[in-house]
Image 1: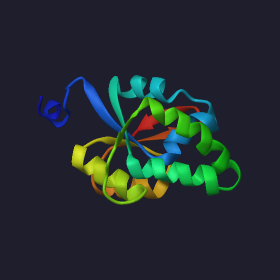
Image 2: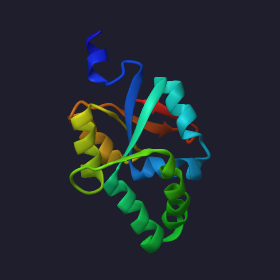
Image 3: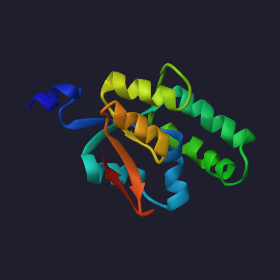
Image 4: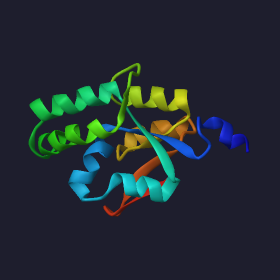
Amino acid sequence: MASDRLWRNPKEKTVILDSSSIMMPFEYSINLEDELTRLLGKTNILIPKPIIDELIFLSKNGKGRKKLLAKPALELIKNYKIVDSEGKGDDSVLFLAKKLNAIVVTNDRELRNRLKKESLQTIFLRGKKRLVLE
């Protein structure tokens, strides 16, 4: 019951995507939304504005695989809600996750460690096939 108060809608979990998770469907051929639904049920997916800026930068100035993955990722983000957040990159994800007590989807080990120190949940890719909640 008490955990229901943490979320706006008790049946809907708030999930924040970072740049690595937005590129994940194109790198590993997984369906991000289906995996999140399998793990959490109904979700409200948010993307911090600085992450969009990061993807735009990668699509123009990135090298190799990151540049190729950033372009379709920019198309994918049109399906999700973009939210203003303080900081840049990982800092914006961490700030928003703390503010909303949200779950973060990321493959970035450093970010996962920072989120763990703040007692925030993360979802990451395991075995290049499925997402797991930590």
